[in-house]
Length: 309
DNA sequence: AGCCAGGCTCTCG
DNA sequence: CGAGAGCATGGC
Image (cartoon, rainbow, N blue to C red; front, side, top):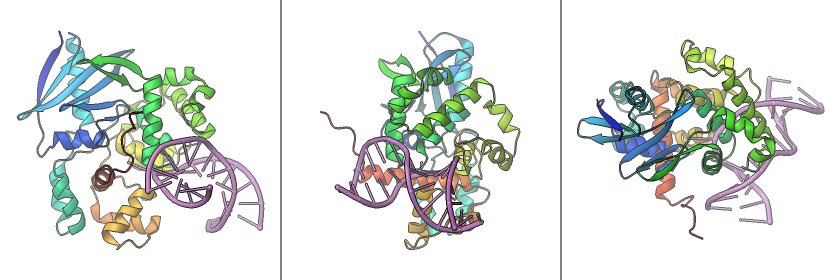
């Protein structure tokens, strides 16, 4: 049962690091599962779900699907290559860094990290809304609950995972049920509005890929609940844009302050100006800086895994 | 116990 | 324009 195919790996590429980043160095984050060297995702395709997994094997990515459908396998291969950002030019970014000591040091440990992606604009948008204002850890906990409760459960290699909740399921949930998932009343509104838009076809990825970065920002920020930061998150995580730099992001501001300004506080405008040094790879710089933070957070034992009892 | 988190809206001067 | 309040809740 099942089919598999092998995709040539891009170079450089650190599979373990990239999938670890995707799962917050914890092995699981929402619909993303990483166990025993295998990356699992339940992918939505048309009305159904394709259970896919990938692992690095020599110079290839071995992609598997549970069923026997040839189309499913092809879909899984394309999607995995997209999720793991096979198309991104890391070499250009590394060359640009040159004498950037601080980030080069981070890059030294993060070499081969690719900026992993969300499955859909809807997923990226919902995750971004959940993450507004609150800490990354709290956002992650809330996302776990949402995916566990409203995702589509499937099994792969005897492991349980969930496809990211469909727009239908989050709409059907109703406001009170989502409030019970620790969303604020506002966030419930925003998430359900996003679900409606997804069902109306407004979040179709092709529609956005035809637009420039700033057009996407302008379009998305017309919507109540979506500000610049949320739109930029979608650009990075769903559309895979290379040069996006969320200068309003508090964590990004602090880590740049720490690495480049001796901890002195900097404004959003300062960060935007400073970020120009990473053009046209500001999105990669963002991913590397976040990865630096995520790894350190886990290494320091902050937000330890759930207690046994 | 407070206070702050990988924002955003709304209100008021 | 800018400043400030409110939101939800996990972690320090």
